[in-house]
Length: 399
Ligand SMILES: *Cc1c(COP(=O)(O)O)cnc(C)c1O
Image (tube, protein in one colour):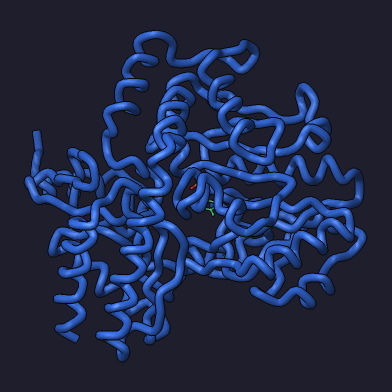
Protein backbone atom coordinates (compact mmCIF):
# COMPACT_ATOMS: atom_id res chain seq x y z
CA UNK A 1 0.00 0.00 0.00
CA UNK A 2 1.30 3.43 -0.95
CA UNK A 3 1.43 5.85 1.92
CA UNK A 4 3.39 8.93 0.95
CA UNK A 5 2.05 12.11 -0.60
CA UNK A 6 3.91 11.32 -3.80
CA UNK A 7 2.52 7.80 -4.11
CA UNK A 8 -1.04 8.84 -3.32
CA UNK A 9 -0.80 11.72 -5.78
CA UNK A 10 0.44 9.45 -8.57
CA UNK A 11 -2.38 6.96 -7.98
CA UNK A 12 -5.02 9.70 -7.91
CA UNK A 13 -3.75 11.41 -11.03
CA UNK A 14 -4.10 8.13 -12.96
CA UNK A 15 -7.81 7.76 -12.16
CA UNK A 16 -9.34 11.19 -11.65
CA UNK A 17 -10.70 13.58 -14.24
CA UNK A 18 -8.49 16.63 -13.91
CA UNK A 19 -11.01 19.18 -12.60
CA UNK A 20 -8.78 20.26 -9.71
CA UNK A 21 -5.34 21.84 -9.69
CA UNK A 22 -4.32 20.21 -6.42
CA UNK A 23 -1.44 20.89 -4.07
CA UNK A 24 0.86 17.90 -3.63
CA UNK A 25 -0.47 16.76 -0.26
CA UNK A 26 -2.77 13.90 0.71
CA UNK A 27 -4.48 14.96 3.92
CA UNK A 28 -4.93 12.11 6.37
CA UNK A 29 -6.00 13.70 9.65
CA UNK A 30 -7.44 16.86 11.12
CA UNK A 31 -8.00 18.30 14.58
CA UNK A 32 -9.08 21.83 15.43
CA UNK A 33 -7.25 24.22 13.08
CA UNK A 34 -4.58 21.67 12.20
CA UNK A 35 -4.26 19.15 9.36
CA UNK A 36 -1.63 16.49 8.72
CA UNK A 37 -0.61 14.95 5.39
CA UNK A 38 0.56 11.46 4.49
CA UNK A 39 4.20 12.44 5.01
CA UNK A 40 3.42 13.62 8.54
CA UNK A 41 3.67 17.33 7.72
CA UNK A 42 1.49 19.66 9.78
CA UNK A 43 -0.61 22.53 8.34
CA UNK A 44 -2.35 25.44 10.02
CA UNK A 45 -5.65 25.62 8.16
CA UNK A 46 -7.04 29.07 7.27
CA UNK A 47 -9.19 27.61 4.46
CA UNK A 48 -11.43 25.23 6.49
CA UNK A 49 -12.32 23.17 3.41
CA UNK A 50 -13.47 26.49 1.89
CA UNK A 51 -15.46 27.88 4.81
CA UNK A 52 -16.89 24.47 5.70
CA UNK A 53 -15.23 23.17 8.88
CA UNK A 54 -16.15 26.21 10.98
CA UNK A 55 -15.94 24.35 14.28
CA UNK A 56 -12.52 23.02 13.29
CA UNK A 57 -11.70 19.53 12.10
CA UNK A 58 -13.34 16.60 13.85
CA UNK A 59 -15.10 18.71 16.48
CA UNK A 60 -15.94 16.12 19.18
CA UNK A 61 -19.61 17.12 19.48
CA UNK A 62 -20.18 16.77 15.72
CA UNK A 63 -18.15 13.56 15.46
CA UNK A 64 -20.17 12.05 18.29
CA UNK A 65 -23.47 13.06 16.65
CA UNK A 66 -22.34 11.49 13.35
CA UNK A 67 -21.22 8.24 14.99
CA UNK A 68 -24.35 7.93 17.10
CA UNK A 69 -26.63 8.59 14.13
CA UNK A 70 -24.68 6.26 11.81
CA UNK A 71 -25.31 3.43 14.26
CA UNK A 72 -29.03 4.24 14.45
CA UNK A 73 -30.26 5.12 10.94
CA UNK A 74 -28.21 6.29 7.94
CA UNK A 75 -30.81 6.91 5.27
CA UNK A 76 -34.52 6.77 4.65
CA UNK A 77 -36.59 8.24 1.85
CA UNK A 78 -38.11 11.69 2.22
CA UNK A 79 -41.43 9.85 1.83
CA UNK A 80 -41.06 9.38 5.63
CA UNK A 81 -40.28 11.70 8.53
CA UNK A 82 -37.10 11.68 10.60
CA UNK A 83 -36.52 13.42 13.91
CA UNK A 84 -33.05 14.67 12.92
CA UNK A 85 -34.11 16.69 9.90
CA UNK A 86 -37.13 18.09 11.72
CA UNK A 87 -34.89 19.25 14.59
CA UNK A 88 -32.60 20.91 12.06
CA UNK A 89 -35.45 22.70 10.29
CA UNK A 90 -36.88 23.84 13.64
CA UNK A 91 -33.53 25.33 14.61
CA UNK A 92 -33.18 27.15 11.27
CA UNK A 93 -36.71 28.54 11.48
CA UNK A 94 -36.34 29.58 15.14
CA UNK A 95 -33.18 31.59 14.37
CA UNK A 96 -34.00 33.19 11.01
CA UNK A 97 -36.69 35.19 9.18
CA UNK A 98 -37.96 31.97 7.61
CA UNK A 99 -41.00 29.80 8.33
CA UNK A 100 -40.19 26.86 6.07
CA UNK A 101 -37.16 24.84 4.93
CA UNK A 102 -36.20 22.55 2.05
CA UNK A 103 -33.11 20.38 2.58
CA UNK A 104 -30.64 19.51 -0.19
CA UNK A 105 -27.06 18.20 -0.33
CA UNK A 106 -24.97 21.12 -1.51
CA UNK A 107 -24.91 24.83 -2.16
CA UNK A 108 -25.67 24.56 -5.86
CA UNK A 109 -28.67 22.36 -5.10
CA UNK A 110 -29.97 24.82 -2.52
CA UNK A 111 -29.70 27.59 -5.14
CA UNK A 112 -31.39 25.41 -7.77
CA UNK A 113 -34.28 24.95 -5.33
CA UNK A 114 -34.41 28.72 -4.75
CA UNK A 115 -34.47 29.46 -8.49
CA UNK A 116 -37.17 26.87 -9.13
CA UNK A 117 -39.24 28.22 -6.24
CA UNK A 118 -38.89 31.82 -7.45
CA UNK A 119 -40.00 30.80 -10.94
CA UNK A 120 -43.00 28.70 -9.92
CA UNK A 121 -44.04 31.38 -7.41
CA UNK A 122 -43.93 34.15 -10.02
CA UNK A 123 -46.00 32.19 -12.53
CA UNK A 124 -45.76 31.65 -16.26
CA UNK A 125 -43.66 34.04 -18.30
CA UNK A 126 -41.77 35.41 -15.28
CA UNK A 127 -38.59 33.39 -15.03
CA UNK A 128 -35.64 35.77 -15.24
CA UNK A 129 -33.24 36.00 -12.31
CA UNK A 130 -30.92 38.98 -12.02
CA UNK A 131 -27.65 38.36 -10.20
CA UNK A 132 -24.52 40.49 -9.80
CA UNK A 133 -21.22 40.72 -11.61
CA UNK A 134 -18.52 38.97 -9.61
CA UNK A 135 -20.98 36.61 -7.92
CA UNK A 136 -20.61 32.87 -7.46
CA UNK A 137 -23.65 30.62 -7.12
CA UNK A 138 -22.47 27.11 -8.02
CA UNK A 139 -21.43 24.72 -10.80
CA UNK A 140 -24.68 23.19 -12.06
CA UNK A 141 -25.84 24.65 -15.35
CA UNK A 142 -28.46 26.97 -13.84
CA UNK A 143 -26.19 28.15 -11.02
CA UNK A 144 -23.29 28.62 -13.45
CA UNK A 145 -25.63 30.75 -15.55
CA UNK A 146 -26.50 32.76 -12.41
CA UNK A 147 -22.79 33.17 -11.57
CA UNK A 148 -21.60 36.59 -12.69
CA UNK A 149 -18.09 35.61 -13.78
CA UNK A 150 -17.57 34.76 -17.48
CA UNK A 151 -14.63 32.42 -16.71
CA UNK A 152 -17.15 29.91 -15.26
CA UNK A 153 -19.29 30.04 -18.42
CA UNK A 154 -16.67 29.42 -21.09
CA UNK A 155 -17.15 26.20 -23.02
CA UNK A 156 -20.53 25.42 -21.50
CA UNK A 157 -22.78 27.51 -23.73
CA UNK A 158 -25.64 27.57 -24.46
CA UNK A 159 -26.40 28.20 -20.79
CA UNK A 160 -29.98 27.90 -19.52
CA UNK A 161 -32.09 30.91 -20.40
CA UNK A 162 -33.33 33.46 -17.91
CA UNK A 163 -30.20 34.72 -16.17
CA UNK A 164 -28.77 38.21 -16.48
CA UNK A 165 -26.04 40.01 -14.52
CA UNK A 166 -26.11 43.56 -13.24
CA UNK A 167 -22.89 45.52 -12.69
CA UNK A 168 -21.75 45.43 -9.05
CA UNK A 169 -22.78 48.33 -6.85
CA UNK A 170 -24.98 50.08 -9.42
CA UNK A 171 -28.64 50.27 -8.34
CA UNK A 172 -29.72 52.27 -11.38
CA UNK A 173 -28.31 49.72 -13.80
CA UNK A 174 -29.99 46.98 -11.79
CA UNK A 175 -33.35 48.72 -11.95
CA UNK A 176 -32.97 49.22 -15.70
CA UNK A 177 -32.60 45.45 -16.17
CA UNK A 178 -35.90 44.62 -14.49
CA UNK A 179 -38.57 43.71 -17.04
CA UNK A 180 -41.89 41.85 -17.14
CA UNK A 181 -39.95 38.55 -17.26
CA UNK A 182 -38.03 39.19 -14.01
CA UNK A 183 -38.96 37.05 -11.00
CA UNK A 184 -36.08 37.50 -8.54
CA UNK A 185 -32.82 39.19 -7.65
CA UNK A 186 -30.18 36.80 -6.34
CA UNK A 187 -27.10 38.00 -4.46
CA UNK A 188 -24.57 37.17 -1.75
CA UNK A 189 -24.54 39.71 1.13
CA UNK A 190 -20.76 39.38 0.81
CA UNK A 191 -19.21 37.91 -2.33
CA UNK A 192 -16.87 35.13 -1.20
CA UNK A 193 -15.45 33.57 -4.36
CA UNK A 194 -15.60 36.99 -6.02
CA UNK A 195 -12.78 38.17 -3.73
CA UNK A 196 -14.33 38.77 -0.28
CA UNK A 197 -16.38 41.78 -1.35
CA UNK A 198 -19.14 42.90 1.06
CA UNK A 199 -22.26 44.62 -0.32
CA UNK A 200 -22.79 47.76 1.76
CA UNK A 201 -25.99 47.83 3.86
CA UNK A 202 -27.29 50.81 1.87
CA UNK A 203 -26.85 48.96 -1.46
CA UNK A 204 -28.60 45.87 -0.06
CA UNK A 205 -31.44 48.06 1.21
CA UNK A 206 -31.73 49.57 -2.27
CA UNK A 207 -32.00 46.08 -3.77
CA UNK A 208 -34.60 45.15 -1.14
CA UNK A 209 -36.65 48.26 -1.95
CA UNK A 210 -36.48 47.50 -5.69
CA UNK A 211 -37.73 43.95 -5.09
CA UNK A 212 -40.58 45.13 -2.89
CA UNK A 213 -41.59 47.91 -5.29
CA UNK A 214 -41.47 45.67 -8.38
CA UNK A 215 -42.92 42.53 -6.79
CA UNK A 216 -39.71 40.47 -7.11
CA UNK A 217 -38.31 37.96 -4.67
CA UNK A 218 -35.00 38.76 -2.99
CA UNK A 219 -32.81 35.67 -2.68
CA UNK A 220 -29.73 35.81 -0.44
CA UNK A 221 -27.10 33.19 -1.19
CA UNK A 222 -25.63 32.76 2.29
CA UNK A 223 -23.93 29.49 1.41
CA UNK A 224 -20.54 30.94 2.35
CA UNK A 225 -21.57 33.79 4.69
CA UNK A 226 -24.15 31.88 6.74
CA UNK A 227 -23.85 29.76 9.88
CA UNK A 228 -21.65 32.16 11.84
CA UNK A 229 -18.95 32.97 9.27
CA UNK A 230 -19.52 36.73 9.39
CA UNK A 231 -19.86 36.87 13.19
CA UNK A 232 -23.66 36.59 13.34
CA UNK A 233 -25.58 33.42 12.54
CA UNK A 234 -26.51 34.91 9.15
CA UNK A 235 -24.88 37.85 7.39
CA UNK A 236 -28.23 39.49 6.59
CA UNK A 237 -28.77 40.15 10.32
CA UNK A 238 -25.99 42.77 10.25
CA UNK A 239 -27.46 44.61 7.27
CA UNK A 240 -31.00 45.17 8.48
CA UNK A 241 -32.17 43.73 5.16
CA UNK A 242 -34.35 40.61 5.19
CA UNK A 243 -34.56 38.41 2.09
CA UNK A 244 -37.54 36.37 0.90
CA UNK A 245 -35.45 33.26 0.30
CA UNK A 246 -32.05 32.29 1.74
CA UNK A 247 -29.75 29.44 0.81
CA UNK A 248 -27.22 27.73 3.09
CA UNK A 249 -24.70 24.90 2.72
CA UNK A 250 -20.92 24.86 3.38
CA UNK A 251 -20.60 25.16 7.19
CA UNK A 252 -24.08 23.91 8.04
CA UNK A 253 -22.97 20.39 9.07
CA UNK A 254 -19.27 21.21 9.67
CA UNK A 255 -18.13 19.00 6.79
CA UNK A 256 -20.93 16.60 5.95
CA UNK A 257 -22.67 17.46 2.66
CA UNK A 258 -25.88 19.39 3.18
CA UNK A 259 -27.73 22.37 1.74
CA UNK A 260 -30.83 24.26 2.83
CA UNK A 261 -33.28 26.66 1.21
CA UNK A 262 -35.33 28.78 3.60
CA UNK A 263 -38.35 30.97 2.91
CA UNK A 264 -41.64 32.34 4.23
CA UNK A 265 -44.94 30.46 4.52
CA UNK A 266 -46.51 32.37 1.63
CA UNK A 267 -43.72 31.70 -0.84
CA UNK A 268 -43.23 28.11 0.35
CA UNK A 269 -46.84 27.38 -0.56
CA UNK A 270 -45.87 27.48 -4.25
CA UNK A 271 -43.99 24.18 -3.81
CA UNK A 272 -46.48 21.32 -3.47
CA UNK A 273 -45.96 17.54 -3.39
CA UNK A 274 -44.05 16.47 -6.48
CA UNK A 275 -42.80 19.92 -7.55
CA UNK A 276 -39.32 19.43 -6.10
CA UNK A 277 -37.43 16.67 -4.30
CA UNK A 278 -34.07 15.21 -3.34
CA UNK A 279 -33.20 11.59 -2.58
CA UNK A 280 -30.50 12.39 -0.03
CA UNK A 281 -31.61 15.87 1.06
CA UNK A 282 -31.84 16.05 4.85
CA UNK A 283 -30.21 12.66 5.28
CA UNK A 284 -30.34 11.73 9.00
CA UNK A 285 -26.54 11.62 9.45
CA UNK A 286 -25.97 14.99 7.76
CA UNK A 287 -28.96 16.42 9.64
CA UNK A 288 -27.66 15.15 12.99
CA UNK A 289 -24.27 16.72 12.23
CA UNK A 290 -26.00 20.00 11.32
CA UNK A 291 -28.04 20.02 14.54
CA UNK A 292 -24.85 19.48 16.57
CA UNK A 293 -23.08 22.22 14.60
CA UNK A 294 -25.88 24.77 14.98
CA UNK A 295 -26.33 24.09 18.69
CA UNK A 296 -22.60 24.66 19.23
CA UNK A 297 -22.60 27.91 17.24
CA UNK A 298 -25.78 29.09 18.98
CA UNK A 299 -24.18 28.70 22.42
CA UNK A 300 -24.34 32.22 23.85
CA UNK A 301 -20.57 32.68 24.14
CA UNK A 302 -19.67 31.37 20.71
CA UNK A 303 -20.47 34.16 18.23
CA UNK A 304 -19.32 37.04 20.49
CA UNK A 305 -15.96 35.24 20.67
CA UNK A 306 -15.86 34.95 16.87
CA UNK A 307 -16.48 38.70 16.60
CA UNK A 308 -13.62 39.50 18.99
CA UNK A 309 -11.08 37.22 17.28
CA UNK A 310 -12.32 38.24 13.84
CA UNK A 311 -11.66 41.87 14.75
CA UNK A 312 -8.21 40.84 15.94
CA UNK A 313 -7.52 39.15 12.59
CA UNK A 314 -8.77 42.25 10.74
CA UNK A 315 -6.52 44.56 12.82
CA UNK A 316 -3.47 42.37 12.27
CA UNK A 317 -4.16 42.23 8.51
CA UNK A 318 -4.45 46.04 8.46
CA UNK A 319 -0.95 46.19 10.00
CA UNK A 320 0.32 44.06 7.10
CA UNK A 321 -1.22 46.50 4.61
CA UNK A 322 0.59 49.38 6.33
CA UNK A 323 3.84 47.43 6.32
CA UNK A 324 3.66 46.24 2.69
CA UNK A 325 1.88 49.02 0.77
CA UNK A 326 3.53 48.05 -2.52
CA UNK A 327 2.01 44.55 -2.35
CA UNK A 328 -1.24 45.02 -0.43
CA UNK A 329 -3.95 47.59 -1.05
CA UNK A 330 -6.59 46.83 1.58
CA UNK A 331 -8.50 44.50 3.87
CA UNK A 332 -12.16 43.64 3.50
CA UNK A 333 -14.60 41.22 5.07
CA UNK A 334 -16.74 40.66 8.15
CA UNK A 335 -16.49 38.46 11.22
CA UNK A 336 -14.12 35.61 10.32
CA UNK A 337 -13.97 35.98 6.52
CA UNK A 338 -11.24 38.35 5.42
CA UNK A 339 -9.60 39.24 2.12
CA UNK A 340 -6.22 40.88 1.70
CA UNK A 341 -6.45 42.71 -1.61
CA UNK A 342 -3.29 42.69 -3.72
CA UNK A 343 -2.14 45.77 -5.59
CA UNK A 344 -1.20 43.59 -8.58
CA UNK A 345 -4.07 42.52 -10.84
CA UNK A 346 -4.23 38.96 -12.14
CA UNK A 347 -3.44 35.51 -10.82
CA UNK A 348 0.37 35.50 -10.75
CA UNK A 349 1.44 36.87 -7.37
CA UNK A 350 -1.59 35.71 -5.37
CA UNK A 351 -1.26 32.10 -6.48
CA UNK A 352 2.47 32.21 -5.84
CA UNK A 353 2.00 33.50 -2.28
CA UNK A 354 -0.57 30.76 -1.59
CA UNK A 355 1.78 28.11 -2.97
CA UNK A 356 4.80 29.29 -1.00
CA UNK A 357 2.75 29.47 2.21
CA UNK A 358 1.50 25.93 1.54
CA UNK A 359 5.13 24.82 1.35
CA UNK A 360 5.65 26.38 4.80
CA UNK A 361 2.61 24.59 6.25
CA UNK A 362 -0.11 27.26 6.03
CA UNK A 363 -3.35 26.78 4.05
CA UNK A 364 -5.58 29.44 2.51
CA UNK A 365 -6.46 30.48 -1.05
CA UNK A 366 -6.68 33.30 -3.57
CA UNK A 367 -10.24 34.39 -4.35
CA UNK A 368 -11.56 36.11 -7.45
CA UNK A 369 -8.04 36.82 -8.68
CA UNK A 370 -7.97 39.83 -6.34
CA UNK A 371 -7.71 38.83 -2.69
CA UNK A 372 -5.87 36.40 -0.45
CA UNK A 373 -8.83 34.86 1.41
CA UNK A 374 -8.69 33.84 5.07
CA UNK A 375 -11.56 31.70 6.39
CA UNK A 376 -10.04 29.89 9.38
CA UNK A 377 -12.22 27.71 11.60
CA UNK A 378 -14.34 30.06 13.75
CA UNK A 379 -12.61 28.58 16.80
CA UNK A 380 -9.16 29.86 15.70
CA UNK A 381 -7.15 31.36 18.58
CA UNK A 382 -5.20 34.62 18.69
CA UNK A 383 -2.02 32.55 19.03
CA UNK A 384 -2.85 30.71 15.79
CA UNK A 385 -3.66 34.00 14.06
CA UNK A 386 -0.27 35.39 15.21
CA UNK A 387 1.51 32.27 13.99
CA UNK A 388 -0.17 32.44 10.61
CA UNK A 389 0.40 36.14 10.04
CA UNK A 390 4.01 35.98 11.22
CA UNK A 391 4.64 33.40 8.49
CA UNK A 392 2.80 35.52 5.93
CA UNK A 393 4.74 38.66 6.93
CA UNK A 394 7.98 36.68 6.66
CA UNK A 395 7.10 35.65 3.13
CA UNK A 396 5.90 39.10 2.03
CA UNK A 397 9.17 40.58 3.29
CA UNK A 398 10.97 38.48 0.66
CA UNK A 399 9.29 40.44 -2.17
C1 LIG B 1 -19.57 27.38 -2.46
C2 LIG B 1 -20.69 28.26 -2.90
C3 LIG B 1 -21.73 27.76 -3.71
C4 LIG B 1 -21.74 26.36 -4.25
O1 LIG B 1 -21.83 25.39 -3.25
P1 LIG B 1 -21.52 23.85 -3.62
O2 LIG B 1 -21.81 23.14 -2.32
O3 LIG B 1 -20.10 23.77 -4.06
O4 LIG B 1 -22.47 23.48 -4.69
C5 LIG B 1 -22.75 28.63 -4.04
N1 LIG B 1 -22.76 29.90 -3.61
C6 LIG B 1 -21.78 30.40 -2.83
C7 LIG B 1 -21.87 31.82 -2.36
C8 LIG B 1 -20.71 29.61 -2.46
O5 LIG B 1 -19.72 30.12 -1.72
